[in-house]
Amino acid sequence: MRMTPQRQLVLDALLELEHATPEQVCQHVQRSTPTVNITTVYRTLELLESLGVVRHTHLGHGAPNYSVHEHKHVHLVCHRCDRVLEAPCDVMDDLRGTLRARYGFALDASHLALSGLCENCQKEIT
Image 1 (cartoon, helix red, strand yellow):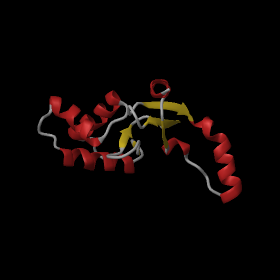
Image 2 (image 1 turned 180 degrees about the vertical axis):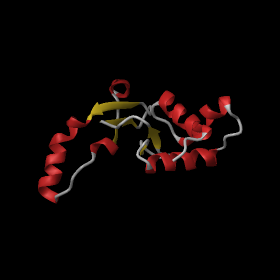
Image 3 (image 1 turned 90 degrees about the vertical axis):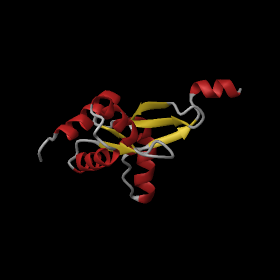
Image 4 (image 1 turned 120 degrees about the vertical axis):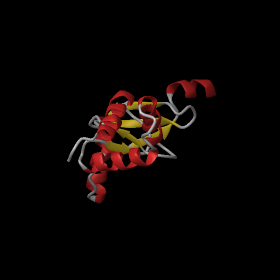
């Protein structure tokens, strides 16, 4: 697969942004190359994901977030302020064991987002 300039721009944007929606990637790319459109970004992300270069995660409602880096963490999404924290996958070990024992299900915690309230929002509420 040939690395076109547009593909490289999308990949570079993801490296800089770390987690980003296709729209955020497009905005980032268009700063330097305004001719790249959202369709090109979507197609490039799909191709890069099929090649195993990027991975997506749904962090809540709306578009998925893409990342170049190997996901070795669980996303903790505050549904009040939209803050996203990352926790190591091993925090899911007990649940992983329970799911395997009860249902024969192998959990991929690296593709997981949990919603709740972050520490700051909990303090504001109480």
